[in-house]
Length: 94
Image (cartoon, rainbow, N blue to C red; front, side, top):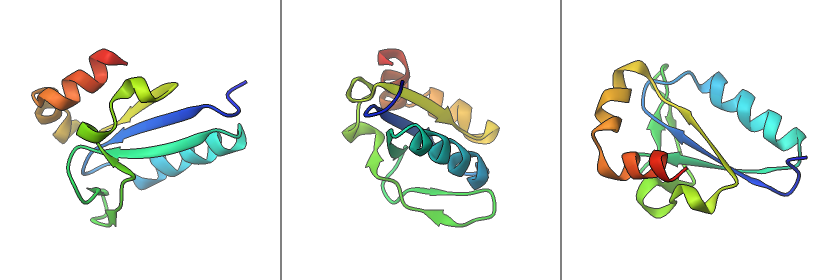
């Protein structure tokens, strides 16, 4: 069971908002807590250019704080994020 656990979802600009919503809904159905994490302050811009507020910035929410993590990143942003030390640490620590 995932009830009572915490899921961290690392996001990037350019992602489909529906992908995030689907994962959040599935986690909530399992009675889990979800935190949306962005690589920069202010959240992320979805593929339809909507600003979505994040719960945490990657530097303030290291992956060991979560029971599980998911990465929902756009192909365009993946390379830049892979070169960002805080994001690399988030993924490698997971």
